[in-house]
Image 1 (cartoon, rainbow, N blue to C red):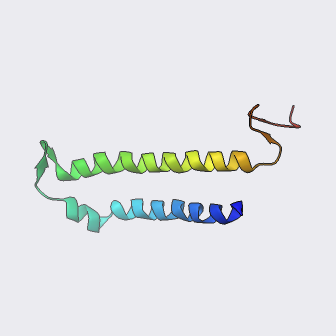
Image 2 (tube, rainbow, N blue to C red):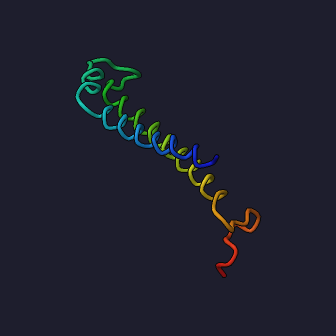
Image 3 (cartoon, rainbow, N blue to C red):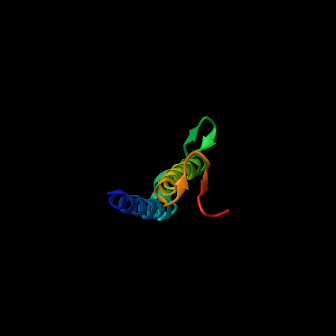
Length: 88
């Protein structure tokens, strides 16, 4: 049952990557390329400085989730000792 859950998460990695590539290409850059200042910052600069950390944070959350999922699913994993039995 645990294998059913890993496939959509790996698909989410691919979708997030494609979304990041699309967000840095012409259509989205053209949408945010306006001469508008928000808090004194041009909109394209704000787009990069807000979008980039958000994407890094989402990737961080994916990696934490994948790390916890792979640790608990590996055979011989001792949760309390944080090591694999038989590898001493």
